[in-house]
Structure formats: C-alpha cells, structure tokens
Amino acid sequence: MVTTKPAARPANPRFSSGPCAKPPVWKLDDLRDAPLGRSHRAAIGKSKLAEAIDLTREILGVPADYRIGIVPASDTGAYEMAMWTMLGARPVEMVAWESFGAGWVTDVVKQLKIDATVHEAPYGEIVDMAALNYDHDVCFTWNGTTSGVRMPHGDMIPADRAGLTLCDATSAAFAQDLPWDKLDVTTFSWQKVMGGEGAHGMLILSPRAVERLESYTPAWPLPKIFRLTSKGKLIEGIFKGETINTPSMLSVEDYLVALKWGRSIGGLDALIHRANANARAIWNFCADHSWIDNLAVDPVTRSNTSVCLKFTDPRITDGEAFAKAVAKRLEAENIALDIGAYRDAPAGLRIWCGATVETSDIEAMLPWLDWAYQTEISHQ
Image (tube, rainbow, N blue to C red; front, side, top):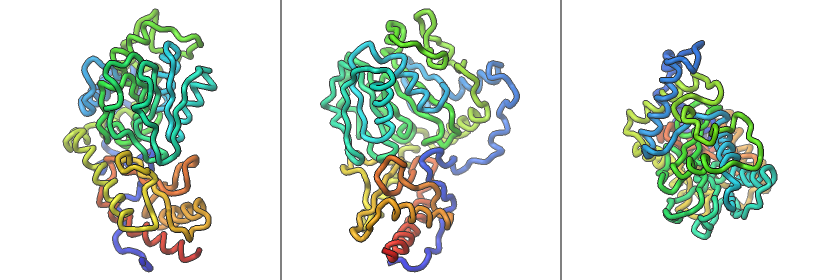
C-alpha cells in the first residue's frame, strides 16, 4: 500500500486526450518561420500548406493516387464534410461503440434523415465488423477515443466492396497501422497523436471516393464550407493546399514541426512503437493491481492511444465521484492533467498514450495513481 507520496515525478504531466502533449523536443521558438500576417494564398502560404500535405502522405504511407486535403473544423468538420457530400447514393450502415461514433449516427439519422442500419456496442466492446454489408456505405471510427476500443486490423473489410468505407481515424492516425486499401475516406485532426493545434482537419480520399463525389449529387443543399466539387468535378486545389477557408498559418507551422519530428525519429514505425510502449506500461500496471482495469473487454481491441480505465474495487460506492476525486488529486499535485473519463463515458480515467508522450512520464505517473487511489479509498 502506498501511504507516502512517491519521489519521482513526470517531467511533463500533460496526458490530455486532446489537445494532446506537444512533441518532447517542442519549443515555442520552433514556430519562428510561420508566415504570420501573410496571405495563405501567397506563395509562401501555399508552399507551407503543400508541405504539410506532402509530409502527411510520406509519414502515413498514403498511396500516391489518394487525395489529401486540409479542411476546417478539425476532425469533426472533415467527417461531416464526407458524410454530407457522399452519403445517400447507397444504403448506409452506421457503426458506433463510443460517443463520437454515436454522434455520427445522430447526424446521419436525424439531420440527413437517412434510413441507415445502425450497429452499436456498449463502451468497452466493439461491433462485429465482419457482419456488416460492405456493398453499403459504412461509417465507423477506427479508434474509439472515449472508450479506448479500436479496430485491431482491417482484414474484415473486403477488397471488392461496392460501398465506401468512411473512417474517423482521429485517435489512430500516426499511432496505428491504417490499411489504406480498405479505407475510402479517412479523417483526423492535428491535435491528437502529433500534438498539433486544433481547428484543422485532414480529409483523405481514395479514387473510389473521388468517383463518388464526381458522379453523385446529394438531395440536400450543401453549405460552401462542405463543397468539394464544382461543376461535377473535384476541386483539386483543396488537395494542393488551397484551403476552403482561411487556415491559421501558426497552426500549420506547428503541425509541420510535429511532422518533421516524427520523420526524424523514424517515421510511422517509430511513432507506433512509442504509443505501444506507453500503453503497455499502463496495461502492465493494471495487471499488477486488482483495483483497476482496462475498459476494453478484449485485449486485442485495446487502444494504444486513448487508454480508458475503470476502478473495480467493490468498496467504491460512487464510481463517478471516486474517479473525479482521484483525477483532481493528481492534478493538484501537477502529476497528471486532464485524465478524467469523457463526459458520456463510464466513470473512470482516460490517459493519453500517443507518440508525443514519453514512456518515462507514464512510468513516473503510475505510482502517484496508486497513491491517489489508496488515499481516496481510505475515505470510503
């Protein structure tokens, strides 16, 4: 039993699941080359945006014939753009096993009013992805940020599908191996695994997705911010850095800094390795302590980025209050910031383990978690 405060402390207590920790070498001075006060349509602005797209392609291994665009409103904007412009051509299957997936269900069923088939699983579990009809369009999250449950692989998605797959990969990109041949639309945001600033999303389209955009016109009106085609053709400039609305060049510079750091440490393999090491430290801690466990029921589906935990001690009478008290105690000690479970998720903790987090900080934080638990359980 831990009765005294541990001696070691994390060098960086930032374990928020978004915005996430900056790369460990990050300095404010790294942003000095941002073309502030310049038009994003000037040559320097266009070159920065194009570089961000090119580095994204290089590190993630996105095929050359896939388009990559920078779009407004973070991952949410990118995914909404995809749903509003492409759904309706075929029957739709909506998949949800956590709050963000549930949000996409709401938007499709209640806003677009599509009579979709909805597949849901409770927090900690995952939908049987092999049971879906991939001749329909399928919308899903790859990594459930609020449940800590992820797709283990894409083998269940057939290569000869007739429908499109629309994948929200915001907590997976740069930390998990995404099978591009199985994904027609992929979205994510800068502020997750790479620790960038918010408000900008990435939209990656397969040739099949582009074909859909150029051959199908939705029944509903599209606001300007969602329009990806003009006169029946893809607006190619969006995928060369000519953004729909004005981007923050400071945020673009910050994303470039993170991408260059990722490339310098070894690219995608190294980024995945760092996330795996972080998550494994927590999984090992859970295996050694009977009062805490992973929210993900099946170890195969455990996220290596948004690790969600639940307290299992039967002496805890109010799980939500207990989890909040533990998180508050750790924050007061400046040991772990912003690790409470998402508001719609079961009571517990959520510790970000993406590539910008140092394993040494996770390892230094865990004895403090034990201390905070022991301190709070003594009050039960």
